[in-house]
Length: 280
Image (cartoon, rainbow, N blue to C red):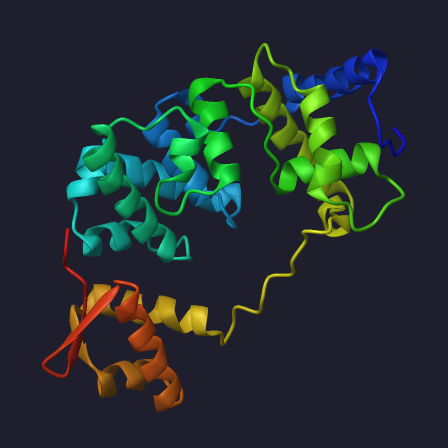
């Protein structure tokens, strides 16, 4: 299909939908969060899938919902326990985010995940794309949303010769081709076809104006933050010198990282020692 700026013909839309569903019907993935419509479980899966490959998420998702089977059980859990279960996924701030989010839902929505995208965006750490995804996969609402796999599909199919394609260019096509009768199945099919495209050819999302190259992880502050949290989860309480003996980085750099972790609510500093924040 060629680049288009305006309305798609009904024939083009039908052909596109047929192609996507044909792949999905033959090669659709069997993922654990596709066996539930529980909005809490969908929320957890969507947050875990941010910047993380599906294969890495599956085991952690199953472990997480087994440990915290309800949104109230997550809201009441201590931070230390949430971080411990989250270990291995990276981006520990997301663990704090879903914990805070669960508490907010219990306090302000009676423990029920809202089915309104605007109310979801008002939750701590939930952006527009995640809010739309929750509405699609938990409530089967026909909303327009774009993430990396969906970008890949539409850039590949409709912008084959273009670079720096914007989401503003993609959104009308996503809206026109949306299967409003079953948005859950449609977006699942798009996601799986997008995964297929990225495995079989250069990632079309690299031609998106919104594509960002992830910063180097090895030796980064992000890696050190993860190592600090892992150390404190294992050993409970450590002095600055003991942490630095394990981390082996510049003391000034480590001190800034520890201060940042404390400010964000990951750790506490008292009596010359650092511990994981034990608050619920």
